[in-house]
Image (cartoon, rainbow, N blue to C red; front, side, top):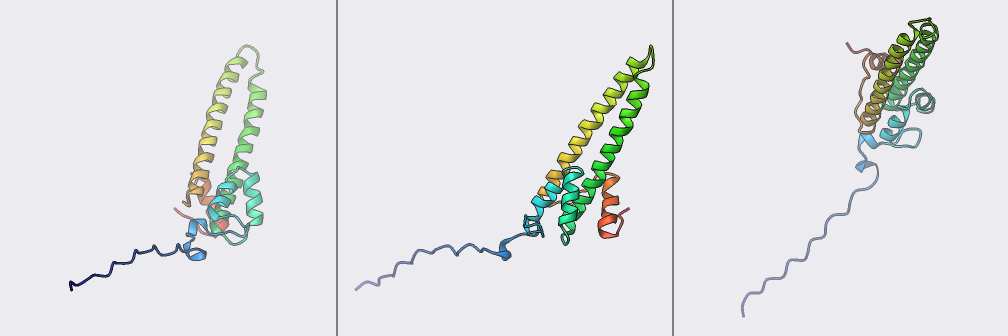
Length: 152
């Protein structure tokens, strides 16, 4: 009688791991109940999102950093808008050359707002992907406010 080989039973894949062991640090839950990366991305909404998440989030330094950065960025954006409106109100109404100032100020306003939106979108993308990104000049200030440390 020839030797018979038992067929190899089909292997079944191991069950997928679920629960906290399968959650990466970028997707861990914050005190707001949202995943950390989602909370940080929402905190990037200038001023309002930053204030909401800075008040609500007490433990997660990643979310608090993006919230503080958003508060500072939104505040700087508002200060720029106030200064621009004052300059526009004064310079655009000068007889004979006011139209030239109005065009120059409008151009500066458009460039600054496009740049601010680009920075805002980059910050949201970086936060959502779990990368801590410092907005130039603003990031170190936010890091100092949240962590008490500075980077040079």
